[in-house]
Length: 358
Image 1 (cartoon, rainbow, N blue to C red):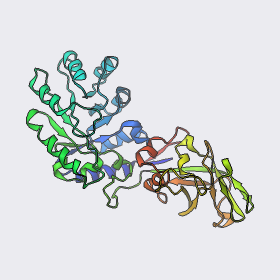
Image 2 (image 1 turned 60 degrees about the horizontal axis):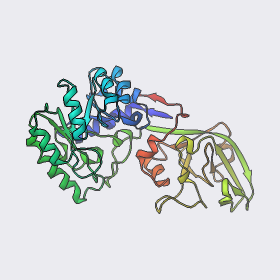
Image 3 (image 1 turned 180 degrees about the vertical axis):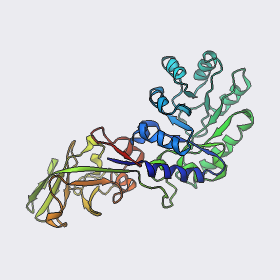
């Protein structure tokens, strides 16, 4: 799997420009969405990014030696078991509950923290009422106050405006803190969502932010699998488990060494297989810009492609087939599997050799 760090940097510059007067951070949780945080985060730092967001303290600890001067925020907050690690690696916990707030403010000797306020997700975060009470307490003030959009990928959704009003209304409670609301899709909602710091994630890695517009993001990954063999099969024969696909013609089938253990989801299986959703149509691979369909069920380690329409000499054992990249976009591959680009990227397995280049 090739990871284009130059494209990653360009995508961050695009997000920074779209963020207007706000500073632009980066979500690098889940191993930088499967691309390799140990390479992606330092590249973003060289580009000028100074604010990074990880899921837990283990992720932050691994990045600290690579980002000695950056602010590394831990989205899952802090607990007694992660407290020492958070302090040792100078991480900034994102406090998500009154209990976390009491623990950190009572034990961290004034070390900085971020405060997460739930404005419509009903996921992590203090309620606005709890946040107001926290601001009125004797606790040290947070360095950052943040919330998270629930529907930013649907720009016309009324919850977006409601969350922006609610979040902006809390600014006076925390006059010394920076404010952060916008994720990738939220950045496209305009200045009212930007505040002091934006937190792009999926857009950095080449995914669509769900705005309905053509994404300006460059593709970052090219995932390929080796062709193990090319076999001849007769019309009327079946392919893969369950005999789900019956060949309508004499066919050539390229069997590649990647399957759902590698994040090439079984739900992307081809013709004749029950689909996961109305939008899932079965995946494709590509040779030299030519798409070829998956046929039959994707298995743990193997996937079959119909290469009958390509010249016989064009596909041979040992060749590589593109699973996603310049021909099969990340969004196309996700749609084929009936899922989202986030899940597809973060489920790419460890059997891929990640080759990072700039």
